[in-house]
Image 1 (cartoon, protein in one colour):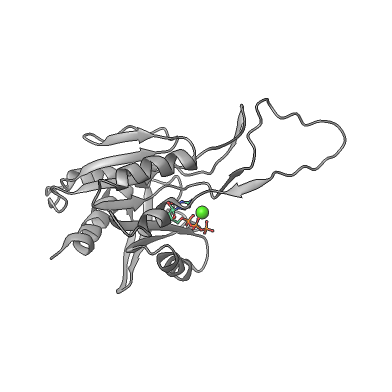
Image 2: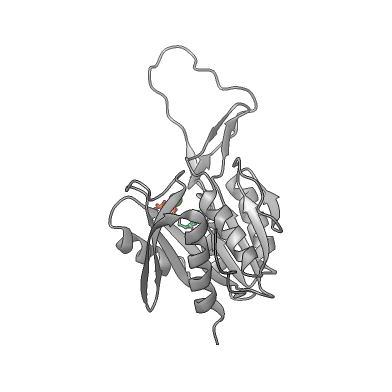
Length: 226
Ligand code: CTP
Ligand code: CA
């Protein structure tokens, strides 16, 4: 429990956040996805709301309660998430891509359950790349919100994160070492490094709710401080 009320650093600001995994259908009973729980994105939405923002949370399939006062848009796959994110981004001052978007989807979605058929003990799946949601928003020429991404990495964390910051034209990236215990997917705790063009801030392992308050303060200061 916090002893002090959070600073109202986002009062009057509109914030959109993507969270959770996406699911890419293969046939009526199967999909490709990942282990994202959505906890970090939901914690950021709650923290932004506490900081006074009007928050839209674009959520992939997760089993989490909507934070009080937050507007939630549920989506399943990456293309639906992109559509909802673009719509929210048109109206927002700050966009945070916290979702673990599936990088690829099956080229075709079978209308009937795919059978394992006879013969071969091996099979393969044709995949096509999904659109990059956060890069699309950061690359806008008009109606471009301050744009923050995450980088989930298992090695050379800062190097990969700095590369993504540049390549996606983000304002900030939150680098997340998902290889360390208490450092990532599905956990209630996390440790991250916030990286911008002008330097990095390490935030040591703490509860995601506390980390989210710290992140929102850093992001608000970088985005809106005059
Ligand atoms: N992201 C996105 N749309 C995608 C893929 C990723 O918006 N199709 C966003 C994530 O929400 C995150 C950032 O991009 O904010 C980085 O995601 P990550 O998976 O770490 O990076 P990728 O660019 O997908 O690179 P890779 O998975 O190869 O490391
Ligand atoms: Ca990826």
